[in-house]
Length: 440
Image (cartoon, rainbow, N blue to C red; front, top):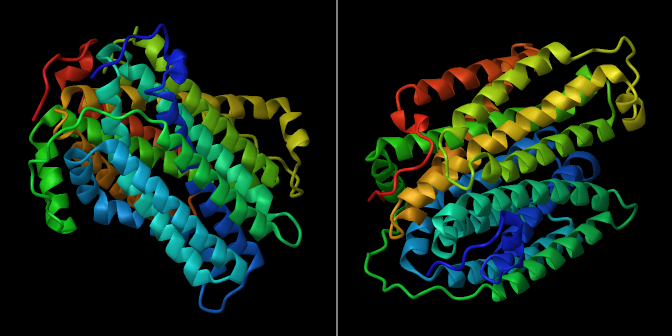
């Protein structure tokens, strides 16, 4: 049942049907990244194991986390369409506490195998939670406030990613027992998420009517086939997955970009991450005002154009210092030549927020409630494929000695070509309001 309208998107954070849900998903995303980054730092810099290559820690951990999205997204979508979404969220949060207890044991005993197993399990935790999360919003928000709700969720996700990475890096750097502090923090955040989930009010019960296909491979193909039945929804899914591809290029290259190109230390790399995350959050929150509370696909071409414009300008704004000595945070921001680079990075990520929120909102608004979780699951599968492709392509380009600024420039050029190839073939992106009908 739809709740009473709200005055603006931030007032949703005061509503019982939204606030506990928001903080539940916020804690989950923060914990994913706190744990992943803490383990990555430990296996890269502090703990050396003969069978585990420390230089590949980031790639291996990222792959383990994404792998469940490929395998189990289709099954997760069925579960969220079939059963009570609140119950699924609470059970997932229960499982997260168990995973973090196991991870704490792994951190205490310094067992690399246990830590990697928990990375996979946290990926599975997010795989199951994702469809329930996005399918929950259309059931509690009026259509004209769905964009604002998605904007807050997007903002919360990127802020929690940022805070999780920062907390993971700080905690494991504590001399002596940093890994134990990280374990305690992960368990604490998991418990906080479970407490928040308990306060999410129940939804109207829906009788189970569809038999669940437990074969993840056939169900994955079935979900993708269902999504392809309606061209504009599938194109929205492709555009969302491209946004993740585009963002992953920058996130993967920030450390080497900061060190080798900008000649900045690890604090400068952290600054780039902060600018990117705050930019996406700012762009996401601006969607409601830009769309005048109407889920407007016309915002998507605007976001795509901005992403490419500021990426190209980023390429031309980069000034490489003559010195080989790494500059500190204060030294970096004290140079006016770097201000344009920071501005471009912030703006291209803000445009990515403008780009993505209307797409998620359109899918939620135009898909039947009985299929929405499965469509979101199909989108997660595509996202995983695009993220893997991003990592492989970036690795290939780096192996060919193509510089980081040139890779950024290529991403900006391909972005405008890919996005507008879809826009120009789909009239729906030229219309300001969405259709009122539902698919499936």
